[in-house]
Amino acid sequence: MKLKLARRVENNDTKKEVQNMGNEYTLFDNDMVQHCVDDENGNDENKEEEGGKDMSEIQNQKVLSEEEIEQEAIKRMHNMENFPSMSNQTNKIQEEKDEKDDQQEDKLSQQQETEKKRRGRPKKEDKEKEFEFIFEDVTQIPKGNDNFKYQTLASSATLGKLWTDGVLEYQGNIQRGYKLNSKNEEVPVFSSKHVKEILESALTQKLNGGVITLNILDTIPINYDEENRTISIPLGQKLQILDGQHRIRSFSEWNRLYKKKAGSCISPEEFFMPILIEHVSENTAKMIFSEYATKPLKISNSRSLYLDVDSNINKIARKVMNDSQLQNKVEVVSNTVKKNSNKIITFSVLTKGISAFKPATAKECEVIGNFLCDYWNELVELFPKLMGDIDPEIRATERSKSFANESMFQIAYHHLAKELINDENWRDKLKRLTMDNFLDRNNELWVKNITREGSKIINTTSTQSFVISNMIDWVIKEQ
Image (tube, rainbow, N blue to C red; front, side):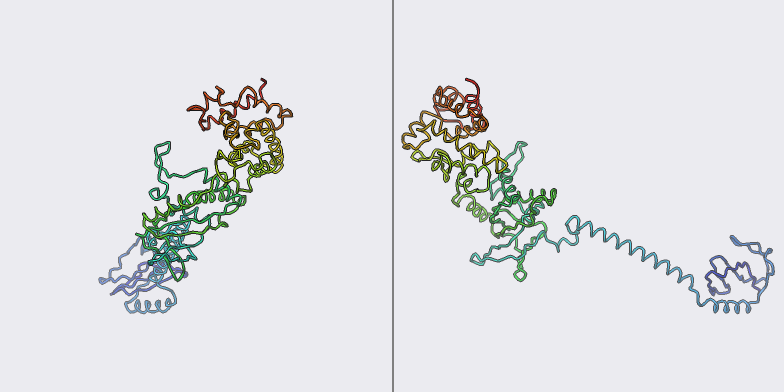
């Protein structure tokens, strides 16, 4: 038996391995393949492998015996024991690939976690472990019969966000109900004007706040942790608003404004509200809302305005009622003037009339206030039986004949004052109000346009505008 060197390419920098494959010894090299092929017939036939050379071109060809080949193989194996095998190299490549895949998975996981935090919502598999919100520092208040309500604090920012996120909800069936808007859509009953007024009070740091009352229906177990003093609101659970709908709506708008104009207004994070959390049935919730809405003794609009000491309009009104002939003649408790009263105008009507001036600065308030003191002094002199210090019965008789002391006309006096404030002859022009029975109830101008059922005034925006425009025309235009 003879074995013949088939092909040989030297490369001292490559990694090699000798494998025993039965009667065939193969010397592996990245750039070389050597075969010692068993030729049982002793046939020295030339072989050519892919990329190899014709064996006839190989010079110094050496034919080895089987024993010599075996010894050469053993020798080469000893020389290469310090080099890693091809299988080790393959494993290393696989390990590098696995490590790269792990890095890719970690990166993707980090991206998903970042996106989850940005959305503020947990991944599906984490939902059972997450909460909509957790109220902290909660005090449990006994109500008897093992029933409790809970009290805590929350910032306006938090309440506004809970409303925006839908965690706090308006329930019309336990509150003010629903109405149809211009698009025939069912919407909650609330006053956008009231929401705006609360927001303005908050932005000017004049809002006291009061207590916000919420409810978790008693059909839902309350997650109160007595040890940590927390109430956890699970995902999907809602809290009903029993009292505070308008304030919470304004807080949501406050959040939006602060985000848009950060630094230019007070932060809603700085204003905290006491929160009362009930855990009652829907019927009990209705009763609680009814108590809030109807049972307390409400103050009149005149009284509410009178107690607001910061408004520019109110500052002017206070000056007029203290420094003119209106002193002791302004009703500050009720919205109406009773027949036997010595009052002639309500604080509400007085401020509504003064609002025609829209004062913006302290200087403007001073100028307007001084003028209106003189102005009202003149009006009292023009209508002594209606506005002067007179017996209430005499005043009542005169009111049956003239509109001069009706609230709609009192408001119009201030719009007229706005037109006269810079007129040197305003006193002379004002006297025209007493001419030609202009303010008499029998004047066809009023009978046809602002009254019904005799001399009863139709109190609408359009009739108020009619009185204002005609009064200004009568006094200012040349007669």
